[in-house]
Image (cartoon, rainbow, N blue to C red; front, side, top):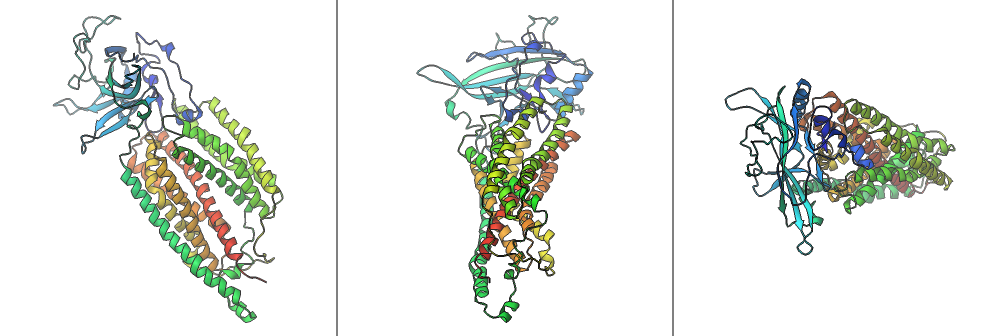
Length: 599
C-alpha cells in the first residue's frame, strides 16, 4: 500500500504507524513488506500488508483501525500531504483500489480514479477560513463473481468511497469503546452529511472502515476491462491519421526523388562521354570520391550507432510482446522488468553493429570500440539515475531504489550486457568488411559555400520536427501514464505510432541527405544521425511545456526528478531516432552511388 502522487511516493504507514498511532488490531511489528520484482522496485511500488481485514462475502461495518491524537509535527505532515493532493493506493487480489466517479456530461459513464485523496480543503458555512479535513472513514465495495455451479466466488472489483467524519463516543476511550457516529447493530452508516474531521493540533482522529460485497456479472478473466476502458480512442485515431498524413507527404517526396530526379540524374551521368561534358556536370555525382570518406570522430559515431541498435531492439521486442498482451498492466512491474532484460540481451546486436561499422572505417582496435559501446550510454544513464535516487532517498521516499536492487542492475549490466556486447563485437569484426560502392580519393574535395537553408544546424533542427510531430499526441498519454501514475495499455496504437516514427525518421533523413549531396556537401555521416535524432530536442521541449501546463509541482526535488528522468528519456529517444536516420541514409547513399558507372 503506497501513498503516492507525482514523483515522490511514501509508504502509507509512514504517516500512520511509525511512532504515534495506536491500533488495537494491528501492532507496528506486524507490518510486512511483500516481495516485488525489479520493475516494481524501480517504479517505487512498495507493497505492505494493511490493517483492513476482509473476509470473503462477510460485510463489516464501522470497524475501528486506529485512534490518533495529533501534535504539531503530525498536523503539519497531514496538511502538507493534503495540500499536495497525495493519494493512498491499495490493492486487493492484485486489483488496484479505485474511486468511481460519474462524468458530468455522461451520466451512464464512469471514470475510475486510482487511489483516494488523503484529505481535502474546505470551508464551514458562513466562515471564510479554509480548513484541512482528513478522509478517516473508508467504505470499501468489493465486487465478486460467483460460479453458480461450484458456488465459489472470485474478486472482480475493488472500489472505495472516502469520508471525513468527526467520530464521537461516550466516556473514556478504551478497547471496548463504541462509536455513536456509526452503530453496526442499528445499521447507522457514515454519509456525506456527517460533520467532517478537521486536522488541527491536539485534535483526535479515529480511523474506521466499512466493507460491502456486491455480486457482479463481470467474469474474473474480464475484470481488468473496466480499468483499461478506452474512453478517448477518437483522439488516438486522430493521432494515427495525423501521423499517416506526414508519412504520405514524405513518401511522396521520397518517391519523387527516387523515381524521377534520381533516375534522370543517373541516366544523365552514365551517358556523359567526353571530358568536357564530365567537367560541366554538377550535383551529387561530383562528390562520389569523398562521400564514403570516414567522418571525424568516427569512433564515437560507431558507439552511438551500436547503442541505438541495442535500444531499438529493446523497444521493438517490448512493443511486440506488449501489443500481443504478454505485458499486461495486471502484471505490476512486468513491463519495466522486461525492458531491462531485453536491453541486456540486445547487447549482442549493439556490439555487432558498432564493430561492423568500425571495420568499414578501416579501424583495427575493435575491443576499444566495443568497450565504449558497452559502457558509455549505460554509465551516463546510471550516473544520472544514481544522483536522482540519492535525492529520493533523502526524502525518505518509497521510490528510492535500495542497494540490493542497485546491485541487481549492475549485475545485469556487467554480467549479461557487457559480455554480450563483446561477443557481438567479436562476431561483427570477424565478418568481411563492408566494401564501398565507389573509391575514395586520397585528397578531400573542397565543399562549396552552402545556401543559408543548407546550413547544418538549420537542416538538423528542421529534420527533427516531422518525426516529433508524428508522435507528439501519443506522447501526451505516455507522459500522463508515467507522471500521474495511470495505466498505459494501448500498446496496439503505440506500436503503429512507433512504425510511423520509424518511417518518418528514415524518409526525412533521406530527403535532406539528397539535398545535401546535391549541394556537393559530402559530410553526411553525422548529419544523418543528428537530423532525425534532433526530434529528441523537441521531445524535451514538450516535456518542459507539459511540466508548466499539466502538472502542479512546487517542491524542488520533484522538479529535479521530473527533468532528470525526462532528460534520460529524451537521451534514449535520441539514440533510437538517430540510428534509424543514419541507417536510412547509409542505405540510400550506397544505393545511388552503386548505380553509377564510374571509371
